[in-house]
Amino acid sequence: MTVIANNPIMPGFYPDPSICAVGGDYYLINSTFAYFPGLPIMHSKDLVHWEQVGNAMDRASQLPLGNCGHSQGLFAPTIRYHKGTFYVICTNVSHGGNYIVTAKSPEGPWSEPYYLEGAQGIDPSLFFDEDDRCYYIGTRPCQTGVKYNGDWYIWIQEIDLENMKLIGEPKDVWNGAMKNICWPEGPHLYKKNGYYYLMHAEGGTGPDHAVCVCRSKEIWGPYENCFCNPILTHRHMGWNYPVRYVGHADMIETPAGEWYMVMLAVRPLECHTTMGRETFLAKVVWENDWPVVNPGKGRLTDQVIIDLPEWNPMEDKHSYTNKLGKSNCIPGSSREYDFSMMDTLGDEFLMIRNPRPDMYDLQKKEGLYLSFGKDDLKVQGSPSYIGVRQQHHFFMARTTLDTKGLVGSKKAGLALIQSNEYHLRLEVCDGKVTVILCKQGQDEVLGQGTAPESEVTIFMAVSGLQASLGIAHGKDELLIVKDVDIRALSTEVAGGFVGCTVGMFAVDETDEAKQVEEDVTILDAACFRSFSYESM
Image 1 (cartoon, rainbow, N blue to C red):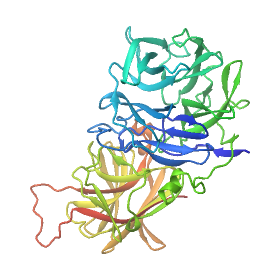
Image 2: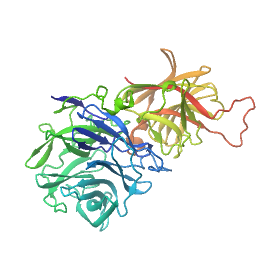
Image 3: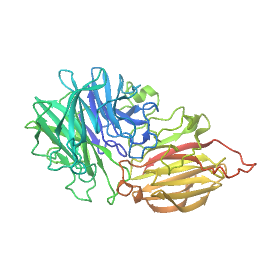
Image 4: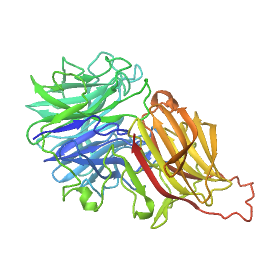
């Protein structure tokens, strides 16, 4: 049997993918940077249909993110399995450096992080050899002196996982396939037919990104370059090609001996990327003891034929989705949330940095109470914000909220966030709905409308690089602004490594010098009745 995967398999902000196979089960993990919880873990049995089974970093004690930038925090993770234990190794570039967490089940609970003394650089990976010895693979600055920006080396050192310590001597083994290459990174080590294969990215995680490979008969090298390098890239396809920035790959082998590769890429519109780096899939065959990606095509394709039987987590009684007793959020799907009927938020929801323990509360028959935070969306703090990833170029997000208490300095609404310095938001306060575009940390008011009393539904409709925002009355929509240019929310303008998220926020902008009128009811939280994200 075969199934067909549509690329990207993880649409939206799912960068730096790593994958491991455990029998007929496949587990995928991605970077999350400054978002909490961190490192989503996806599960599939056919590489087509995926369910999120949790997040590896879901406790504040595991994941300190205080004051980190939107594109700092958690960089590229690697997920591996060995003899009953799952390992995730990652870098918190803002707090602590390289670390490992472990679990007996991918659903968790995951351990507290074991920080690795002496583990320089970023993008760590683990490799278990046939003798059960384990090796750390990472990338770090050239040890004899960095001659240019990106002059880094891939290095290997043995690791003692019982004591979570690097042992023996580290060795630089590779600095890229091309001459004077920049940023050899994202390394992973594999063994096949007596060769150790070191697969890595190089050229930077932008338009020059590429997947390259080298091999050696000995783990310490010397490694020989593949003459076909890069084995996958789109950097030669031109600015207007629909899929770009291809690189940072990982591979798995199925029980039937088929090989598949995941990697990141972007789908820009008019050379602007708002969804960030996404996860794509390709087939791999081996020729002359070298991997060949999508033979006969040599680039990513819209679809990939998978030589596995079809699996549906909604129908599998043993799936995590069915264990929950409710529908799990499928990546790339539309979704509606009636908060008045919910006990918990799904694993797909994201917050910015470390949320306060009392930031939100779900109350049956009422909704999601989001406390008024002192940090607004423009500061590098912990705003009261709960959102989901933007996963389509064309989508509609809407929320219904109670307007009671949204007066004076207390505001709540809907936001499309690239970073604290670049975002688009609708604010409800004092009977008004205001549309604001923030660029380089500066607000620009684009329009204003009147909010109905007691309850208001606001929406944001994104069509490519434009957005229209307004108020909904049943099926009728009253536009406040139309066709807002949102190219500023792209990584090409705002910089960084993240894609946009969209969600709800609440803020109290109280100036301590201001007096609150006696007849104003003071509330601690804004109440959101519902939230929806719908592809268009």
